[in-house]
Image 1 (cartoon, rainbow, N blue to C red):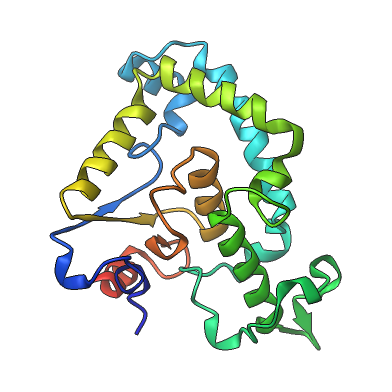
Image 2 (cartoon, rainbow, N blue to C red):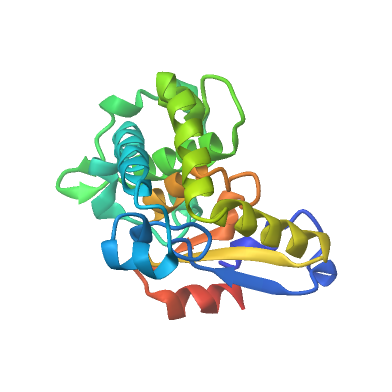
Length: 221
């Protein structure tokens, strides 16, 4: 059963009043619209937001590098639990992630790929400590906080409004799920950087780049 998002809910399925499916870019957060001149005019954004957006993009690229995205991209998965059958579930502290090859005799080593996805899944949900994504950001945390504040202010409080809508859905007994047009690790990274990881668990995030959105919808319904 691959209906991970609904099955991972903290309350019984019978208590979920409705399920809302969201895209990330230009829905929950402004992304391309921050750097596209035409979209900036259409949305009446402060033109200075472009400089802030490029700063956030640099942080995103930095973090993706720290999350092994260059190696993982060719093994993109639609969900963080897609490779669970290959995961040996041994403590991640016993592995040297950077030394483990994702290929074995010319074939993908899905056990090692599954371990990396598990590390990302657990780090995404960690608030602090050496196993959290925040640790990877290092001295960029304060810069990111200022950038996100500026993005919100210059986009007519887009991020603030999105968060309020999501929280109101939760309060009403509904559940929100991401079906992104992007790949999985970049999607999780964006959600983390824009601080939506407190609302969306990794299990509530699907990426359609590999299988298509229709497939993702089938897993949800």
